Length: 310
Image 1: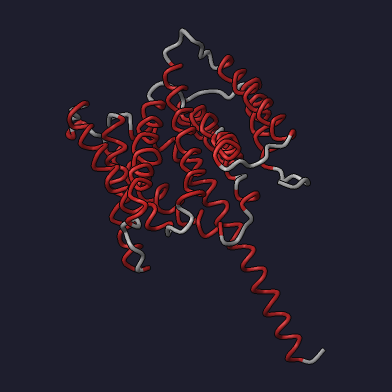
Image 2 (image 1 turned 30 degrees about the vertical axis):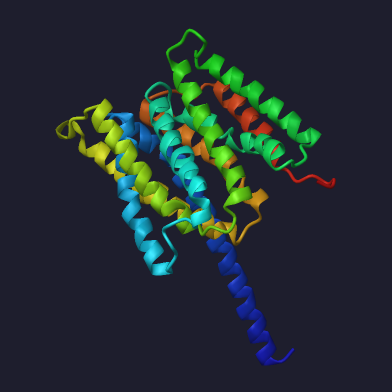
């Protein structure tokens, strides 16, 4: 091997190592960003009502997305033929689900919220079968059964039943997961040609305006009573979780297979449960840890690639 060839091989190896390191770092950033989102919501809603908190979060995120759209020269408006899809995304991906998540966290812990929302890929699987007519394998059905059986036991361990006030929070969070899953599947069918910046920018701005306006009408919040801690949490949710996590996730989409990247949904609840327990002064019992591990294992099974034809 010539000196020139050796140098090229060394440079190629270095670029490969650096690329792998950056990919691993981005993956960790997404897991941490999404894992800390739930604690951020918990802190924000300590002094800001759910509707208003959702609107303020999007108000903070919207200008940054607008800057990205201008820098990348991406349109902020959806194609004319996709106006109905635009309304659907604005309401069913941003507006309603984020209010439901904020409301849910007024009823249940941030860690449990993350575990409940981690069911979302399972709902994607169900909607993919119904809307896209994709095949569901036996292993996926088994994983779903294990996951939801474990979830039922987690709710029992946490003392949440039909007669418990927290049940409304559980339903709200699962409702948010269902709406997000439906949006992912409908987007795959109708919005594949829409830029991810376009997809997020204007819907976030309008959803923020709608949520904030409804918050003023329904919740009548007192801005003087909003604590500094809640303001910082809203800034983090708007900048770190909404924008930073979004950018890292979509960069990873170009570097990793969707199957590997989808394991973010299995990892981030672990961070959320540990951080939530620490902040809320709770002890993670052995039962909760065991059922949580079983739940995430069940949902991980649904993400494993099959060997048969689809």
